Length: 384
Image (cartoon, rainbow, N blue to C red; front, top):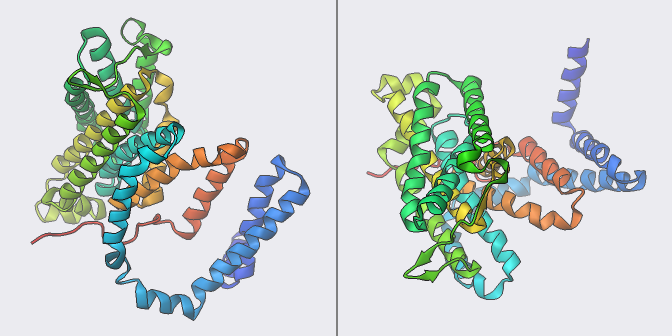
């Protein structure tokens, strides 16, 4: 009886634009009701209903199909160069026209982009679900903090050591964990993330426990401090461009194609001679390397680290960036990281409702475009 009712509702949802829009609008209004009065909830219901009905109607109309057939194949190639030029110009002039607050937000966005690109290697390319990625972020940050405060090493000397320490931790975790698959692998990575956080929180003699480590030095070059926001902005986004360039090269290489093959079908990949275990170890080691880079940048930016910055929620937040942009799509990951890092600041004026709005947006995205903003296409370029 209940199954029949559910099937009828699904059939109506697929056929009727108004019914489908009404369900989603009612759900949004009910979520909004505890925070506002009934009048505001009704306005929310009508706004969502009208907006979604218009979107569904346009998607099903002949105009939408004609537009796609006429412009979609050439759209990325036609506007790629102008878009890149515009982005580069915006990148260089931002420190001259933006206030310090906005520069600070862009710097944090750049660090999250590096993190999301590293996680995309593991989850998006190789298909290995990792719910403890913040642990490697923490290892990179604490490695730099300890080397700098206890041994007096500078930023540039610590940067490769922090990246290698995070990468080595990824390798150590991957060796036993890759015997597992799917949800079991996710649980192991989640547990590893909690182990790292609790270790940092309780090892008072080394990490100063929950009080964290203070007095971390900013980057410097030839006795010139680069801690000012304008200088640090260029450092972070130079690393963003470097990360993007290297990952794109690896993505289109033999290793990248092997990762995609493993993600699509392990048995088929193994049958054509791909060493599954070896390439999974590559994915974990390479992806966590960038978490170490991001952790070093974060520690030098904040000049303070504590375990509260590397919780499970942080891992979920980074994973959400990858899913939002599109699993396996490098440029989509950059877009998803930028949006999710920027959106909480944009919604700061509605402090009480911003997480509700953010969650509602993600749920709607999963309903209407589960492959992500730029997902669904081929992300690997094969060179001859």
